[in-house]
Image 1 (cartoon, rainbow, N blue to C red):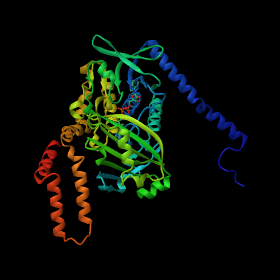
Image 2 (image 1 turned 30 degrees about the vertical axis):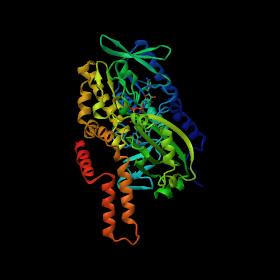
Image 3 (image 1 turned 120 degrees about the vertical axis):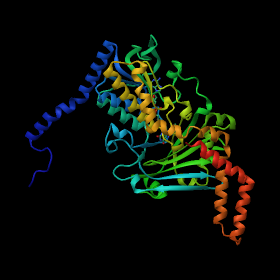
Amino acid sequence: MHEPQGLRTPAKMVAAVYFSFPLLLLPILRACRTKSFVEAAMAEDKFDVIVVGAGPSGLAAAVSLAKAGLEVAVLERGVFAGSKNVMGGVFYRHPLEEILPDFWHEAPLERAIVEQRLWMLGAHGHTGIAVRSDTFGGIKPNCWTVFRAKFDRWLAQKAEAAGAMILTEATVESLLRENGKVVGVHTNLEDGDLRADVVIIAEGANSLLLRDIGVHPEIKPNQVATAVKEIIALPAGKIEDRFNVEPGQGVTIELFGSLSRGGVGLGFLYANRESISLGIGLLTSDLARLQVKPNDLLEALKEHPSIRPLLASGSTEEYMAHLIPEGGYNAVPRLYGAGWLVVGDAAMLVDSVHREGSNLAVKSGLLAAAAVVRAKENNDFSAAGLASYRNALRDSFVMRDLKKYKGLSHFLESHPHFFTVYPDLINDAGTAFFTVNGQSKREMQRRLLKMIRQRRGLLGLMLDAVQGGLTLQ
Ligand SMILES: Cc1cc2nc3c(=O)[nH]c(=O)nc-3n(C[C@H](O)[C@H](O)[C@H](O)COP(=O)(O)OP(=O)(O)OC[C@H]3O[C@@H](n4cnc5c(N)ncnc54)[C@H](O)[C@@H]3O)c2cc1C
């Protein structure tokens, strides 16, 4: 009989123990390395870079910097990276693969998205488009649904493996400044202050540190959305049946229309492995103006005739709320200064039209890291020495996309009928078009025209189309 593959003979077992011993020691060695690295940095009282915040922007920067051989510390206020983080959440392959090629083979992902739908909700139903393509999935999927608590934790491990140090339950309370230059951070840790050549601010929405150094005044309520999200458990088989997908595949549905009651806001419904993420976000100014609570909007959304059947028999597992910076291009603050850079949501880098934020966060983290590496080579951490970050960001898709939509949010704020009149009008017109009731098609066309005239007017319709088109550059 052949000996099965694996360990059987005493000699092989001894060899296995001998060779795996260093592997068993790895975590201990890593801890010692990290400890000595921290001790060395603390004794010297200085890191090359301190990153504030372990979200996608900060962690992408940390992986990139550590791979370039710099001493990096990431300070995260949560009990672990991702513990406080919320998103819809669709995570894109690009641009993380620039530093972690093939990451999707090991990252904790939910479903690869093979179909993307856009639904305009009216009172009685919805009108929508759907794009399904094999090219979205396959061996290099375009994007996946993720849970940030799992995903960020994994990304933090990658940063650690690259040589960065992650300090959790470490809140940065303010920036240390000397002679007009940022030289480190003041934290809640026992030893308080940590110093670095550069501090990367990756704090997420509503950065207090930027405010602390006077870069960013108070964010206005019409520059930030308040979003709520529920995770609704459903068996995988039910999800696959309801969305017509195979195991491992998923669907996203972006929602707008009646759900926001005239406020500038969007909803989403994403399929995870064994749950649905359902959420809605509205400009904080509109929540105040309309006197509605996001939770009430979410409850109403769950009862909408197009949404209810997709959630049937599901049970709510988790509920969360978070801010989304939506000020766009015009609200992007100063991006760098002597000894500091700002990335991701803290820099307002969110493209809410395309529900993209995490990819802009990662890209800005990578570009910030590249600027810091250049500054280190030149030993110049002044504002001029870090300015290449702004130029690289300006030339990337990040600022180009934000620029394209720079007038849109303001336009929508002043044209609420895009969220009220049109979705219902289109839905009712579509319903009339497909209803067979003995009326001739000519009569039906007349009815449709009357509907348009009554609800918005032909002139209004034309003006909206022209003005809306002009806001897109
Ligand atoms: C409801 C919702 C749905 C979304 N859906 C999507 C989506 O589907 N796809 C997409 O691409 N984007 C989506 N986004 C946007 C996306 O989540 C963000 O753009 C992205 O997380 C930004 O990453 P970041 O690293 O800049 O900030 P964050 O992810 O917010 O990370 C910031 C980190 O900094 C930490 N921190 C903050 N202050 C301090 C401090 N003083 N000291 C130490 N640590 C600190 C926080 O705890 C956090 O871990 C969504 C956002 C929301 C709220």
